[in-house]
Length: 215
Image (tube, rainbow, N blue to C red; front, side, top):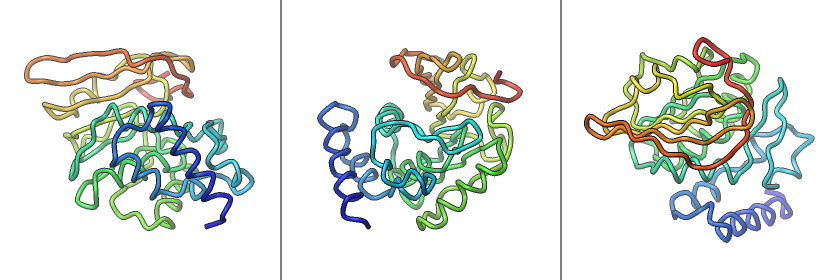
C-alpha cells in the first residue's frame, strides 16, 4: 500500500472514532482491513480516505465513510448473519459489512445499474472477499429467494420503508433506510416479536431509489 494512502486511512479512522462515528472494535477493524481505494475510480485514488462521498459514475456515489460507519453501528451486526444490501454502488459498504459478519456470514447486494454491478463484483473479487454476492436487479423489491435476512440496509433515498423489505426481514431483525428524496431522514425499523419499532437516526443525503417501490 502507498505510504500516504495508509497514513490517510489511519487519520480517517482516528477522526471517525474521535467524532463518535466508530464506536465498536469490530467496525474499526473492518475499516482497517478493507482498502477503500479498491472501490473508487483510479482518478480519485488519493481522495480514498477523505470523509466525503465520491462519484462512481452513472449519477451514483460511494458513501462518505462516516455514513458507512453510522449504518454499520446502527445495524448492530453479528457474526454469521445474512444481510441484504440495496444499492451495491462500488461494493465498499458490502465489503465492510462482510468483514464484520465473518466468512460464515453472507451479504446479498442488489444493484440496478449493470455496469456498476460489474464494477462492484470486480472490486469485491480483487479484494479477496468471498462472502458477498452481487445481483443485478430492482433492489426496491428485495430478493425473496434468499429471505429472510437478519439485517437489511438501503444505500439510496426511498419514499418510505418498503413493505416488501419488511416482509423479508427476520423477527427479530432490523432495517436501516434513508427516507426522503436526496435530503432524507435515516430511519431504523426493528422487528421485535409482534411489534415494529421505528426510530429516526438523523439527517442524511442519498441519491434516489429507482424501482417498483422507489421513485
